[in-house]
Image (tube, rainbow, N blue to C red; front, top):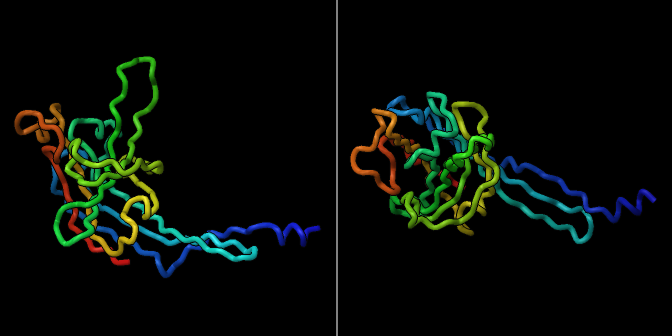
Length: 211
């Protein structure tokens, strides 16, 4: 009986493919005003394969990409609900310097309801265009967003849900944007703007990621 059951079951294994594992970390100086001054940005990817043992044998593989950003100062998630305040990971897929994809992390504005005690949670969205205005094209929401501590945030998603099909090597960098009327160093420099980088922005260098 056990042999019959074993023969009819599809045994699935998640096998990390070490040949495809790749990690890059970019360090950044303490050089920006505001709470989102970046210490380091990290991109890590690893290939996984799902293999069935029944006949006919099949194999499906995908690549996970993990993005992490660490700041010098602690910050609350509400910081990302300020106008023109966000964290972004930008991806350049062609010879120009414009970002073709970005993972933008913001915290939705909490409803003005004293009875609503739901904590503010950052949310991540993938866009095309990446001008940080309404002209950007929505691609998809990202479900796996975590704050390991008060200095960092981490996003995990599949590569095929971030980049176009067939995308090979690419350049990437992190951006933090912060602007607040209540912060003298990072207050708007002129009339309020809709979109773009805020008064205090911090960029890591573009890094080439080969696959």
